[in-house]
Image 1: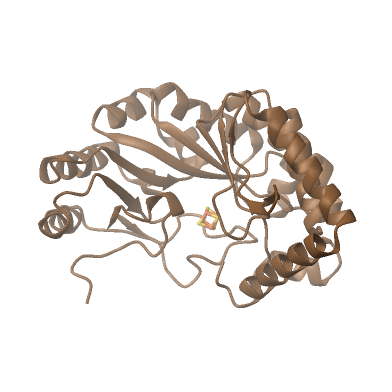
Image 2: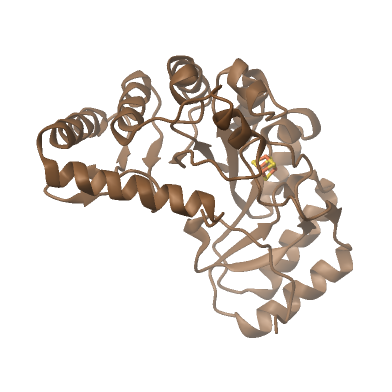
Length: 312
Ligand code: SF4
């Protein structure tokens, strides 16, 4: 039995964090690839119940140093409510060092000022996790993201200017072969404009029942092979001129091959050339070494299985 209400999802980097739910579901809930909150009607939780949950959590997790607030777009709450939530967290967790949340770039672009974000940062909001997915306007429409590249840039720049750490999530392979070139160009453009602290990679895998699954079945989007996905990442990294940390921290992402599989991570621009060489070598290994090719094919099949069973 849970003693306080938890958000159903959190980033992998929050695996050891206290989880506090401040809203239920997603304010938008229409992205064509996403099934996360489809069965949940969006609701803001009662503020006093949230504050009570924080106190209860602190009784069991007093020494925790990180905390994540969910669900998908906590910044839709009024700034004064968020400040009360943050103040209650820091008052009850004496060792708290980092409080993070998911957010939508459009909500920040249209509904929060830089001053409000700075105020939230002063009260201890450390990082926002935002799904960019792609920076290409046509593909953003195809996936019904409900935001344009300009919204992503505006929202992202506000977060960076406020001092809150920004993590933008990018989906290699999202537009399949049909949109690959423009997906790379648009995404690199937005990332270079915003310069987020983190670029996190979440390689696209379709889930049955989502609109993008139907587009793929109808032949409108052709999925990329492992080599093509890695080539798309190569083209993206090649265009990046930002100073972000590039992090590929999800088991479904294709690893690079460096005498065996390993996560592709690096600090830009210092590690850019090293990362590009690693991807080049990986594609070469896949093409020339049958056992490496077999490894990537098995990884592709595992991704497909996880997509079909909705366990991404
Ligand atoms: S991707 Fe994010 S914004 Fe889009 S429906 Fe899913 S949770 Fe909501």
